Image 1 (cartoon, rainbow, N blue to C red):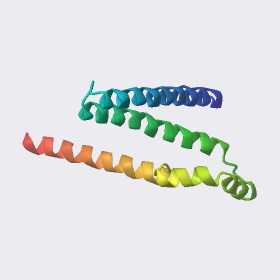
Image 2 (cartoon, helix red, strand yellow; image 1 turned 180 degrees about the vertical axis):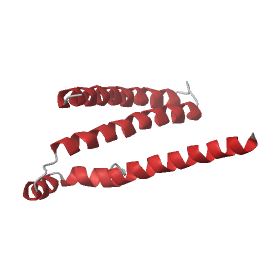
Image 3 (spheres, rainbow, N blue to C red; image 1 turned 90 degrees about the vertical axis):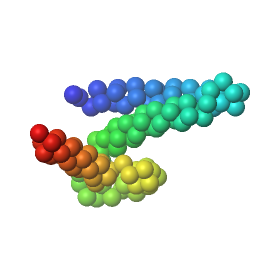
Length: 120
């Protein structure tokens, strides 16, 4: 996969997220008008949040593609992208957070497998 393919994927996901945000506004209006329940709105909000989470990760990958390797340029790049760095930190979109999340999921899966083997 080339960088141009990753960028295309990112912009596709961005457009889908923006569409979902607009749809969410319609659902919020429908709740106010009494057409849907609050539980239904919460479900839609969770789906939009999933899209946002995926978009954040792709955004982080795009950031890593642009990150220079040389220390001098890297420091300047990070300073220029301070707001983005802050956003990633606030939303826990970085290698450590993602690795921790994956490790937690793997631990849970392994515990389930062990439990199933013990039941046999």
